[in-house]
Length: 152
Image (cartoon, rainbow, N blue to C red; front, side):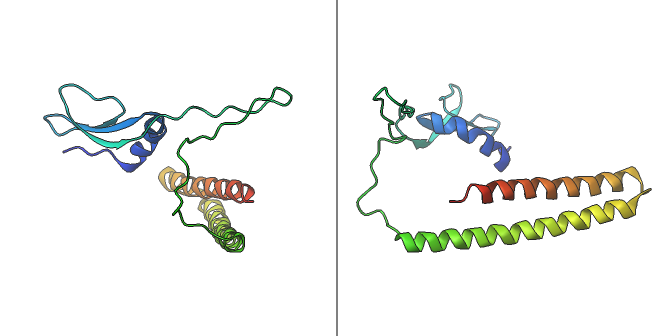
């Protein structure tokens, strides 16, 4: 039986979010397909169903236009509430965790740079592996900096 791997499913999520229904379909050979359209000749099971929401309209100054909520579903009255101080504490904890991860990735990138410089004339596969490791650390550093920049 073939399985759809997690990264592939993540690529499909934006399409699934726009769709009102998400199906998991499989054919006679066991191949699995995640789709927003029920496929004939395949056994399909509904994974999720949600009403389509209208896209948000941005307010234009001076036109009197209002901004619609992205979701028409109101927050339930029994939804847990967090005090402002508690949320601020959580945000501070999150920032501390991100800062620690950034420091770890920076150290990893420095070690990878040093190993790459020391390798100098190693076989191509070894150099490529070191370059890939360095590139991974640099991408992680960029993503962490972006995430830290998005904090309130």
